[in-house]
Image (cartoon, rainbow, N blue to C red):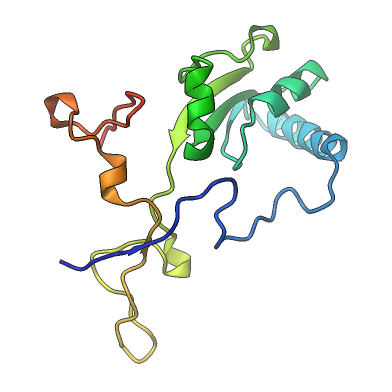
Length: 170
């Protein structure tokens, strides 16, 4: 068995991946205005909802936007490991409307786990090695989260389960 390269789990933006959005120096007001226009344009094209997966705890930002009039889309705010404990402490579960005065437009989303890289950068973890232009093996990609961190040994019925009780369907 090949031992994979384990990269540190991300907290906020992963250190090895450049953060390109929002651009540095963009104020929250200007960002909200840009999001408002994008949401309005998406709704005009028939889009009714989006899944927000920025590396932040986005429920507050989307609540602010909805209260300010960005009411064109339903938004499911995903959560990353860095913010999972906060969501659990608040008692938020996937599908819960957050908060109730958003008219049901903002809800708590799923746990997002980035386990490896991407194919186009040759960082997706693969069984077969990547080859360079000369045919030489150059690795199998990177694992960001070790498999043992994804699966709890005490999961009922042998299905993987995160420590918060979220079951995995794979």
